[in-house]
Image (cartoon, rainbow, N blue to C red; front, side):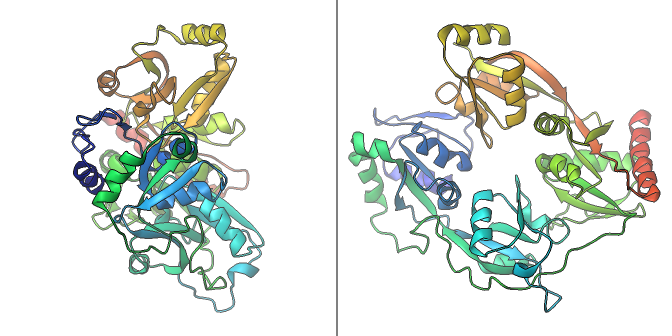
Length: 462
């Protein structure tokens, strides 16, 4: 944001509220009547420009590559390099320890994890992997090897940062910088020359960047490098996933109350594998959004996440073995349906009737795509489209969506953005999730039950 804001200020776009202190998503120009803007999460910008909701966007070219490698014929044109935000997406793995264990000749499917699933798929094809599985993540990809992934895609400034994490680089997938993108149809049919020229006047020349052909893999090399063999834990070991981010202080408080000591959590050094005082436990710190799929897939036995993400998973996979094992009673939020104050409805039933009468398709924006789909189906919307988002969801109404499925604690942010709640779908708190398997060892099952009981006792005593 800061370097982008600096360039736009010098270009005299007049977007005075575009700064890191602003809580506004819609920006009006104080100097130009031909410019209005909206703030999105960076990953959403190429999609919004490609489908024509916006004429111009500024984002990292890594996200442009992630979109265009899957949709090469989309209406997205990269106009120029902005000259800042340089980095690259690397394929990385743990250093090899077995000389003859080659990636391309492995019998098990090679597991590739990261926030760039489309680039990961193209990488697997380019490396001619015989069998592979792609694990899309919300973040924290560096935590997954070697226990839960063989290759990860990491966004870093340079290869030295990859090495500092203890990985070996398998090659650079795509280099990136911030770039200016436009919708192809807008470029043909709208006169944007003055707006684009104002940027060119500030950045008249940028040294050629190696990712100028966005979406093309660069310098893959060494596609037959060896990787560390898969880390197989003892069958009796309980694999526990703990959340990163703001939930860590809450988890630590509960653990302390239960008499469970965890060393280096939260970690000042980014340690993803803290030590626990309970025998037979292995811990890893990952994103809560990724936990349900990881536990259901057998990579973890227990995890602490939000009930909202558990329900989103179960709506997608009704037959999943995943279950809530204990409500931890913190992190309370409501999952709500939201519209603008100008929308003349006060309930979901009224909204459904309005769109049915108009014969229009209802656009539902949400990070919880499966909850959004379930909401539309159970409320019998005749026609609807779910718009996946990666955050800043309030920005989508009313131009880019008609309804939001959002979480809220007090509702104050919704009020500030001229939005109102028309339905509460459910309430969510943090919880322990897990699943049992018929072939699970009795010792592991006993350890899992003991852990849950320790936390239940701490909650009851508080």
